[in-house]
Each structure stands twice: as C-alpha cells, then as structure tokens.
Length: 500
Image (tube, rainbow, N blue to C red; front, top):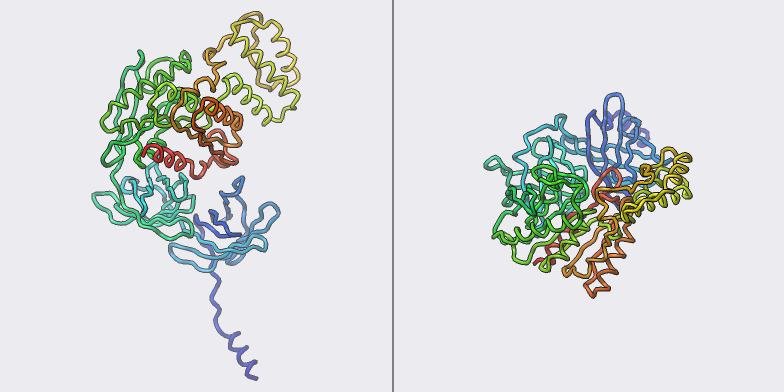
C-alpha cells in the first residue's frame, strides 16, 4: 500500500522539462576516449549543423533534434549530443559516439561578432614566461598561444570573453588607457591561468639600396631592453610583398627575437626584376641585409640568423654559408636537390594527384627532364616535340612544356636549374633546424632531409635538427588549412636556445 502511494506521489509531481538548445551559434569542446576535441554547433530554426574540425578531414554534419538531444551520423557511426544544463554563458552535457560517452562544454557566441578590436590587441605573459599574442586580422581577433601551439580565430561570447576555434577561453580584465592589461586563459579542460600585458613590439620601416636595387623592409623589435637576437626572413620564388611574413615577424618579436622582413624584387617598395635574379643574387642581397642588421644597436652581436620557407629555406642555407658569423638557420620545406629534380618531383606529384597512370607520369617526367636539360645545357633537342605530342594526344589535360622545334628553350631561372644544395653545406657553421611536412607535394621531404644531413655530416659539421610533421603539406598545414600545432614554438624555442 505504501509503495502504491509513493508511486502516485511521483506520478502527480510536476516534471522539469529537459533543457533544449536554443537557436544560435555555439563553440566548445568535448572529451571522448581520453582526448579533447573542438566542436561547433550552428542551430538555425530550420536546420542544425555540427562541425568537428579536428577530424581528418574536418566534417560538417546535419543533425536531427529530439527534445534535449541532437543526433548525427559520421562514417556509419551514430553520435548523440545531450544537453544537461543551460546557463547564460555555458552549456554542459554529454556526447556519445557509439558506445563511447564523454562530457561536453558549449559556449554561446554573440550574435554580432563585429567589435572594436583595439582594446584587446596585446602580448600577455603567462606564469613561467610563455607569451600569448592577440592581434586583429581584418575585422576579427586572432590568437597564438604556446599552450595550444595554434594560431586561431577568437569568437566573442559576451563582450569581454572569447573562445577560439582551438578551444581556448579568454576573459579580459582591467581596462586601462583603452587597453586590457590582464586576461584569464584556459585551454580546453585545463586550469585557467592569469596573464599580464607586456610591452608591445615596434616596427621600423625603411628603404635602402642594396647592390643597385631599392629594398623596402620592416624591422620588428621586441618590447623591453635589448640587445636582441635577430632573424632575417628571405623571400622565396614568388613575387610577394613583406606582409606575407608579418605573422612570423610578430610572433618572433613577441618572444624576444627581432625580425627583418622585406619586399621581394619588383614588389611593394622594392625595385629590380625577380625573373632576372639568380639564387646567387638573392643570397648576396641577404648577406648585405645581414651586414646592415649587425650594425643596429638593438641587435645582439653574433646573434643574427636566417629563417626561410621553400626556396627561402635554400637561400637561408646559402646565406649562412656566406656569412661565417651566422647564429642559426631555420629551413622550412627547403629543397636540397637541384631545382631541376625538385621541379620534376612537383610535376609528377601533381599528375599523380590528378589520377594519371604511372606509366604516363614516367613519360611526362622524362619529357620535362629533357626540356630542362635543353634549357640548362643551352642545346636544342629536335626530337623532344614528337615525344611531347604523343603524350599530349594520349592525355590532353596533362601539363607539358611548350613546343620548341629546333630552337634552344629558355627559362628566366635557367642558371639555377642545376644548383646543387649540397654544394654550399660544407661552409655552414651554425646550428640548423629543418622542418618538413610528410605530405609535401612540391619538395621531396625525406630526400631533402637526407641530402641536408649527409651534406653536413660529410663536411664534419654538427648534424641538423630535423622535424617531420605527419600529414602536413608544403605550407606545413593540415587538412582544412590548419597550421601544424607547435610550428611556431618549435622555431622560437630553437632560436632562443642557440642564441642565449
């Protein structure tokens, strides 16, 4: 009888409705199988999209809503998101992937993301000396943190609080002189840490004439008292202006490393014609920039090195070989074989990605090899056009050299075709860090690393430090154009270690 009465009492009590996810944008993270990953939910009135950016490749999925739960499917596995608690600035719940269940945290994003970014732009130092950099890019804020190792966008949640697309929660405090002086930083489920604003870097811009050509440059100087170690970032093969390396310069300066960037030949404020310049010309320009930088009072004597990507990595090694007092080289995706062989690798990888048969790729490689040899040797190859035409008839969309007839073909960079990366390695006397992505489709990463290591070893030099980033491209990005986590801190830590 008592049990019957208790059952009636439960039946008659009002039930609290299950919390449902309101319409809006949400960004957060979940824990599952011992890992923590980012999740984004876009709830419109007519649809719900769930994005899992940390999957490879990243996935955006259509979800079905039932009461306080969302259901979606990915690769034949059913996911379920259940809301437990709704608060104004945080939503918590559980996430199930099949039979695996974990916790979920979602932050509602402000409906309008446009805001005055100036009060938030600063460098902040965490306990232990790690530096968080926050800056504006177009109309939104970006963050680089040595904790996450990521460069991420910040999304506003309530005016002074933000969450990044890497799962970092930032709360700004103490607004003084129109700048926030402190923040609280939390990465995923870690403990929130205070960070204090530090002196910002400064940028000195100027133009000078080097070897007959005007060079427009910017020198990023760290805040605080010098002298500082310094880094010169050479340009690569493309006709870029200096702003393309402004992020690198900003982050290096934030960590106490002065950085010089400049416009390539014929771009921005720089004169000259890039197609007319050889590797040797570009190397000599770097040597002259090193000489100028060494005279600046804010720069640490003997503390200047080179940091370059792709062709800029090759030039960094060439410049270090020509400057006996170089402090270091950081080479990213640097080709160490001849430019001829590097071009053949890039062409064959491109055609393989397009799905051409291996036999046809081999024929294409041989056609290009003969073309490049004709350029380098300044000799005609009268039978080349027949081989080229036969391949074009079989595969009209294949990338092929132009017809040459009985003429000697030419290229603007003909003088660099047979440049051998190992030829200048015996003169490199400084520490070297080389970084490669395993999925590089422009430069053969493992072959280049081997040439670099063996070239320095044969000359009796210290072995280079070589890091491979699994799944990373030539630009050292992962799927979704995400920069490799830790990429900048690997470079910064190396430079600081060898220049202390």
